Length: 247
Image (cartoon, rainbow, N blue to C red; front, side, top):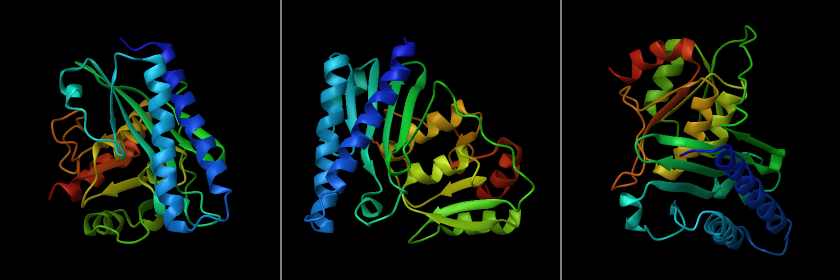
């Protein structure tokens, strides 16, 4: 059963790991490749330590750990990405990287979570749920990857007559929708559960539309954690987005 403590724990875990990553990032002597590896490892150990101390019977699915298959029979599983956007983390001055913490419960799906944007000093969570600012009349915006925007996202932007915005991590992109900076995040081409679990549950708490490209629900704690595509968008444009992605 989800409790208020689960929500506050998710915030505390994400925020704490973010602080650890910021401290590590200040080590200017470490080359970029080593900083990224160290960040992934240090944040993973930190999060796992916190979760196990508070919830010893829960299982954990982490990008940076071997898959504990006991999670498939568990009632509660924490799905974490200790450092989402490792590349951006290693680039001085970039803020588009994140820490993801989500809780999955049997029979309920995702029930609590938090996404920390440590370089911005922000944590967005399921309780209190974020309030998405109203669109102020500006042109619509679709956020895409810095390196390769999927063709489906380009088609969505064209259909919506929307501007394209580029950002790094999946968490940063999804939270850009939550924060009202953009209106849709459309991804195809490959992700795992830890890439989208926390962003999705926070977006859902904020009243945003979340789904697969075909409109089906995002499902977590599956045997294979591969979850290659998603949509996070304002509910008022969801039908227009899905009209493109389901063709």
